[in-house]
Length: 331
Image (tube, rainbow, N blue to C red; front, side, top):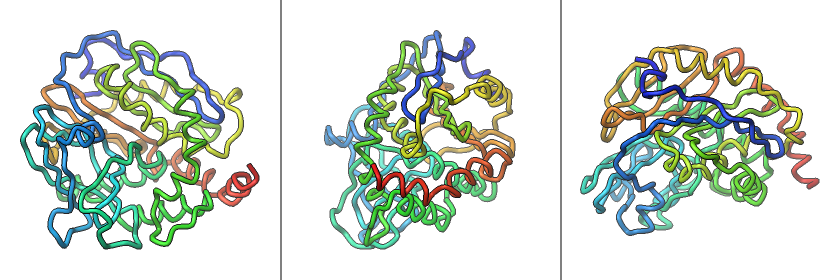
């Protein structure tokens, strides 16, 4: 099975949409997807239909418990930030929580210096972990999946991503809380959200910066993508908050990259909740998603951390961290 086989008609590319140092190339689909309605995790929490807690009173870092008390499934995206409990977490893989069910979900810590309750439950951060850090997290989770069918991350690597993010945006945090960094630049990130609006028929996007391809996000239907668009843009905007204009960012690599990803074989694995996890079987890109009832609900993909492009991209961001911080402080 390949990504292109999952859709009844081809997924095409739209014209680039530009904002500051970020370019969004829409993924467009004219087909019809008959899908069950999903509540996103923030919707379910606001309705009182989702309760997310530590698994026990003492808690355990790599898992949280979610109870779906509503009558429709809840969709939680890979990279979803959850705030509360004994420490803030980020979700390791996309999950669907069926109505009336309770599920343990695999997560990583994004607040290394706290292990005490400020509140018993969790709220949605209404954002995804930054794109570069999601690539690091996803690569270790996929390695864990291949090794022992688990969805654990390299927690040390995630903490390192948090530390470098806080340093990059000059955000002090007594508990090394990633959210402190996001809040430090939230006003600037929201400018990207306002500028990069989904177009008709858009089910996903490939994001590009001056450093090259950042990654892609894909959902099954345009209305579902529209609901998720804000937090998806926040994930990628974090990578370019200190960058300049997007007018001269080239998108020549987008179409070949999309064709390549569409043609890579997919392997299937049991999901933590409903459905199956699909994973790209290749070494130079890291991609995975969730299929449920024969439909691809969500898929994300990044240049692999260990690939030539991944190294170049990481090097570009890491090498200029102090410069980016200086520019940030001067704004």
